[in-house]
Image (tube, rainbow, N blue to C red):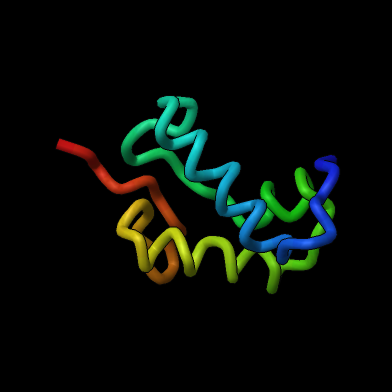
Length: 76
């Protein structure tokens, strides 16, 4: 589990971690971004993970397909 900074919302900190993983290639294009796995990894509620993934979706870093999940957007 992660030590969260009490001065920032947890969802922002989780989004930062995922953003870094995408930038480093740890999460390559088309990789699944599993809410269930993130919930367990960070020890937070699903709503917190959903706020993080919503922010990443707005930035165009991930795309979500209903019934399939969220995936890292392909970079050119």
